[in-house]
Image (cartoon, rainbow, N blue to C red; front, side, top):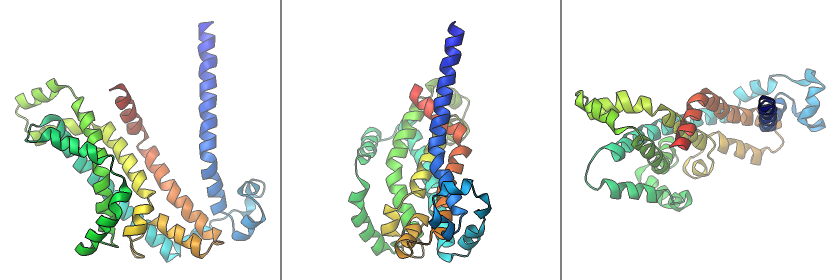
Length: 279
């Protein structure tokens, strides 16, 4: 009887999860079908009508998208902003997190409290002062300027997260490595980073998604030659509100890349979340 109850309970949970997955994927599927329809077909009815008329679906919109210089340049700008930002935030935060967790140096605790205090600073407060500073440094309106801003505002949370994760590692494990003659750099690269891979992957996914989908920072700090895909799509919507044959495939590409990144790191991401919940 208990086995039957567990089986029914598991079946209900799985059915509920499948339903949630279908609801979550419906907008993505709708956007994908819209990206394969012409503007004339889209004007006739919703994307679901394409299910009954699959013959109207084609890749012509994506061909036109590749010929749209603004969209393609914005896509590569997004890559050039998101990837370096994620690598820098994860790399610097890993070094700082290890130092705050296991190294003794002057003012360690006050400095960590300062990092925690920076978590409550809204990003909007720093927009104008940093914009003025970047203007004086020649970084305003450039991709490096957008990257530096995202790195600066992403580091407090990243350092806080990784420091707490690294601090939960067994002290005996690190002491044994030191007794075997391992230096701090060797311990960090050969021991701490492999053990902390789930946390690093989780942080990388969060940081990449945040930067890839950002529009506020890019809208202020990027000019027309360095603006990412979010700003370019918003600009084209404002200028050509009816060009759905370009906007739909552009929006789908902007959406599908984070989805691919998430599923690529799904195993490590789940491990990091589960480890954080246990600790």
